[in-house]
Image (cartoon, rainbow, N blue to C red):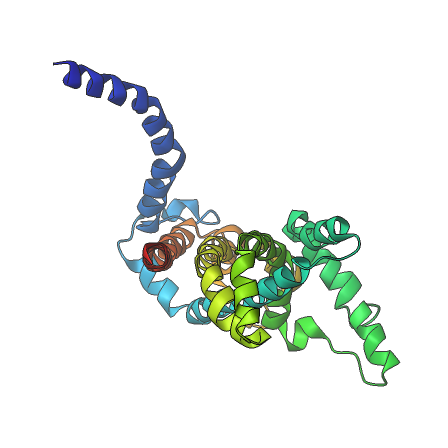
Length: 290
């Protein structure tokens, strides 16, 4: 009897949180699914009505849909490669004793606190501008023509901006993991004659495996929603060269006013994010069980 009362009390205490969760997350998702089956264009409200799978059908036929899927995956993989490799290298560097170590760590971590639109503007106007950016000045100094990065390499430019923002996060997590590595194991490996590469491959990298997996999981969830950097810098162009799925949804729903087709894109984005999240969660679970 007491157990049943305890369970009832526990459920009643959880009920407000469940209700808030439903209102905050589940209800908007259900509305998005509902609108994905409706003909709902803000520029032609008189055409509102049920349209079935047509929104998904026409979205798949959109010339930018499949390029946006490819660009989304390329952006995620590219940023992960840069941040994981760079985070390991920076973490190992910052793990060494140096003068002004605290200040250096703060400077390395600071880009993570810059808002994405501001970071995109800085890179667009101060670093990668072909007229007066730092990259153009360096190119002129060594005697070559400046590169118009956002016109010639739009997706790569976006990847660099996003990687610059997320590199501090990866560095912080991996640096924390490096500092937990037992110093006696390092000394034992050195006494056994293991070189730097051998110590890194057989000692440091296995120790970082869990942290690397966590970095990949968290970053991937956020990278699937990258949008502001593309809006500020390339506008998804030239053509669809730098359009990812979130930006395509923005163009369809906000610019084009087609809420129905934009909602269909949102549902596809949620499905894609969940597939990636489930895959990564299984990878995290396998690593944590080792």
